[in-house]
Length: 338
Ligand code: AKB
Image: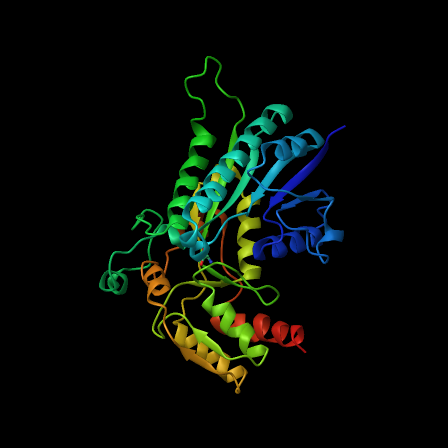
């Protein structure tokens, strides 16, 4: 008997940690966690199975399919923007071919279980490519259809995967003699930079904010790799998980699109540093911009418009900048490094 399961790829990543914790708290006992690394000890008791494997390994994916009935997939595995610029072709393989493999798995599963398989996909503000700093300063909060000209491999990968999701949801093998009856129910969120109190990101370009906070809490000096006035949207990790689960559970009839912006607050790097220095008065933060990484964040919007998520699935963040620091980040980070 194949057992019903929720598949989480990239389970060891920051969003994976937050999501598995939350799903387990909600009583989900059938999580299959997939990651290239061994699952972190703290997550092990919260999942039904922890599979070590690469999403490019078709045989391994077939083995998962033969053991479980996968009704929903949270496909979190990806190489982030900075890492992807270092090895663009590897990023393409993981971010695009890996996603195709998972979309294909979803199609196969939908045939077996006789219903659409939900496919939750974290996209990113990296899909935006604003051409100049003047245009960035002049832009109103950016909507889902604006400035979709990414300048990074990661942004290109995410944007293309959004289109693949739409294709697999509505048009897959449209010339086949018998139309596909079930297909995939693809839902994506364009996340801003995420900040967790419990984990650190790696390989992203929005990493300066979480790195600054965690460095200060450990009494380490931090050299921020973007200019003080750099502004992009951020979100506390619990809100990112909230958004994923709200979208996953939204009735399909209410959804007017496949891809939604979400946002919480948009501080400049200097504003983040000021708050960190308020809470950790000995924090040593200097700004030593890396022009190449700076050129990436300069193309990302200062603010995004998430009105469609608010209208379609009642999205609203629990944390603004003040409460993210005062009620979530600082207390938990202090405890983490005592
Ligand atoms: C990155 O910096 O690559 C990610 C993102 C904004 O998607 N955190």
